[in-house]
Length: 203
Image 1 (cartoon, one colour):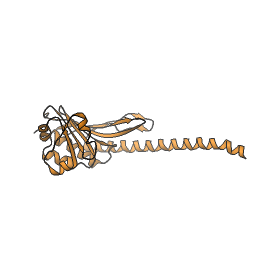
Image 2 (tube, one colour):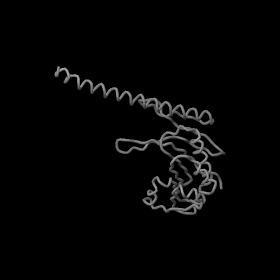
Image 3 (cartoon, one colour):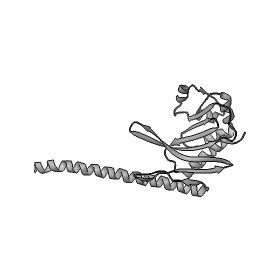
Image 4 (cartoon, helix red, strand yellow):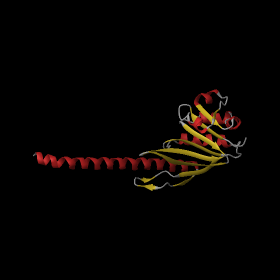
């Protein structure tokens, strides 16, 4: 009996590992399918061009969406950042300003997220002058005037209407807005596009 138990233990362990791996793969496949379906549906509802993402072990991943709003072309996609053995995925909206403002870099972060990064890059803190905006966000810029020109009241209102913790950069006319995870909520994706358009619109 003891010999039988000794033989069964490694078998049970192997079976448990296999079951756990299969469960993870099934979950990952379902998660990827739901993300892809939500992006396809959003692109179809908004008249955007959808390009599929790469197909991996657990299926197709969300690709990219290209379109225009108020005359501004934009791209919605995702990217991953690896850290050791793990990685994290972010949603992103990119565009190019109609008329590039200044020559410096402007970065905006939520107050509690990454506020120390700007000092490492040699950027300066900027107070925009919109109290609700200044209370929520940290602004870093090479030149204060560039930040205040970009972050006018209309742009600040768009930032305040965005419901996620964000990372925003403007450099040489190129705008990038990103936030954590693959976004499924259509209202949040709409808010991201409105934010980018508000920043990039002609002044």
